Image 1: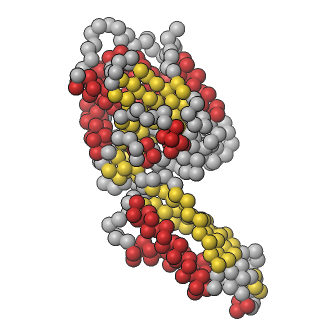
Image 2: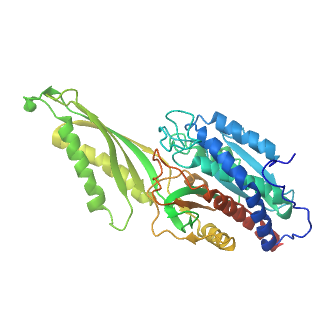
Length: 417
């Protein structure tokens, strides 16, 4: 029985007609990807139908481990939470490369109407992490078949809790030391903003840092007919929201990408009662560390000024989330080169995204790059939309580029010898 029984005939890597140069490895990878593609679709559909929230990926982890067992690939599941780190070792000295996929889903009720829609009411893979895991499993399967033609090791990182910055799965995996020996790391995200099958990768800034702030503005409740006897927290909050817009509009260079958004505001008990307390939550998105510090400082100062003006008492809790995802130029260039060699269209997006990714924790310490895998067809919903669904032809593209990038790193060592 082969690991892919019922799909196609197994890849024969022992024919003797393949050497170990880039062209021959490309041929093997192309054969392997074509061979494994139906299983990748199957894996993705199962994972899509069985989503789990950040920190709760127990059954997802179990499915990944069972699949790796079937493929004959060893793994470490004692890293952090429900993480699984598979290892494909050529048995020969060389570089170590890592490929990462996130595992968690979102607290959303699916509205795709797909036959394989979520079985878990109120939980959905609306951000494509099901696709990321299936692509990583496909890459593991193919690389395991061609490992004898490579030199070094590949780690396949299945990471929990990407969506929950307070858990930050990436940071915890890095802290575990399991990737200490990694020379280069790659990650991807499906992307409706690019045409189906197109790859987007930038040198430098790819995605923003994301911070989460909580604000409480306390005034004094009073009868709505006697506002002079109280301190209206709603009026104060409205002024603060309007005021902080000037931090971006008038205090920062318009060429710098900075966003401050208040996402929730809650206050008041009754239509004819002056509000005594308002709570707000929001996010700040930046790229430069200095600007990240500046925004946090100015939010605190703006609340101090508000209290002086309205005689309120305000409190700010500012929590740093994911850092900015800033690609290493050499790794980004490697992805573009490999994409071209496999006939994949790679583009350089004009602007980075203000969305955030905890892949930033990996490339803050390791050389690497993050790329977008286009799934933009006509009418494709945005990420984090209850109707989000991919075009499954992109899975083959993702597996190919992940395998190609990993092999390119390891063949670089062989060429140097």
